[in-house]
Image 1: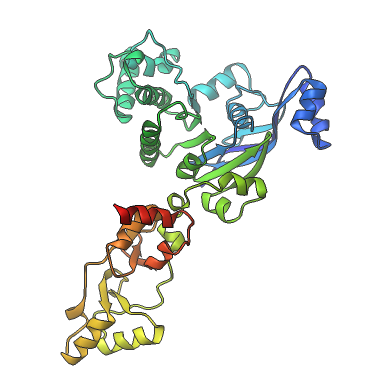
Image 2: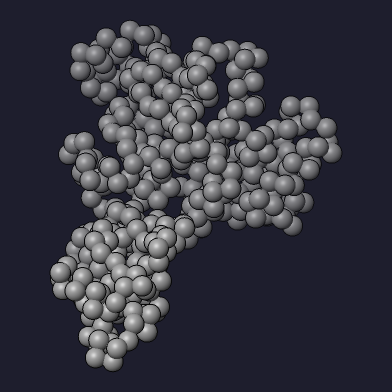
Amino acid sequence: MSTKIKLEHVSKIFGPNPESIIPMIKEGKSKDHILNETGHTVGVYDASVDIKEGEVFVVMGLSGSGKSTLIRCFNLLNVPTAGSVYIDGEDIAKATGNDLKKVRQEKIAMVFQHFGLFDHRTILANVEYGLEIRKMSKEERRAIAQKNIELVGLKGYEDQYPSQLSGGMQQRVGLARALANDPDILLMDEPFSALDPLIRREMQSELVNLQEKLKKTIVFITHDVNEAFKLGDRIAVMKDGHVVQVGTPEEIIEEPANDYIVDFIQDIDRSKVFQAKHVMSEVRVTVSLEETVNTAVNKMREHSVSSLFVTDAAENLLGIVSIDDAVKAIKQNQTVNDILRRDIEIVGEEEYVHDLIPKSLQTKYPLAVINEDNKLQGIILRVHLLSGLISDTEETAEEIQEE
């Protein structure tokens, strides 16, 4: 993927003489020291990140870490004190007037935590507001607004007012309004944090589903580590205005940059981060329908396994044969096809470990991991899921067994 957004050494200092603070930061002065001594607040310091086109890039941090300050540098709601902000290779950090207006209207849209809807306008009128500002004809903007209202699941609510909708529905209106301008980039500043937990989870899933269709470049701000790891293709963790680490959820869990990151992620539900492709084992041996049962038994003995997956010449998964069935088949002069069992649990490469546990409990065979072309990619043994490979998995398995 090509780079859509690039931040180079972006700093944002609040106060009467922000440029004068940069040397103090370079000397290692803390954020609190600078505030007490000068009255200036360090919002962001020396942030450099590359964001790929079409990815969900999550900026995560505790309150006061600088994440909301940073996202507002992307559209110059916060003009950086220093550094460059490149959108499609063009530095917009010094953009003003019509140039800045064009970027905000055509390339970037923002969804806020507290919705920002107009109480006196209907849902349809709220969604079409940005198009109205752009002087688009009433017929055209209504058609676009209607399309996006349906996209976020609010068809039938066009003539309602924000006060008549739940918090989750209001946030859907805010999302529809942002999407109506068809921006390349969607900035989302803790958009779900004001919602009840159940509605929040629904909105997270809705965003995932929408992203599969729209493929926007999304910058998402959150203080919730589980939300970050659920939504993010990559994550930037911030502390005291600094970007501490950038990586995929798996990279951050497996290779935390420092003790701060270790503490930050210690409570994350890893079973909802790791996928089948991360925990599967290599398929060391398979058997085909054309091979004999004796060959299958010899392969199982050679590799110390009690079953073999059966594939065709194109490596498509057909089923499994067990050592017990194979030994009996030799005595009865049967073929591999005669003892082929098709009642196996098949999982996709990107299914989460949390969802694999009940499947592993329902079968006596290994889970077969396939790709979108039905090619066998790996196997997952039940012991891998239930022996503490991922810290939270055992608790989840116990809950399932109790049910």
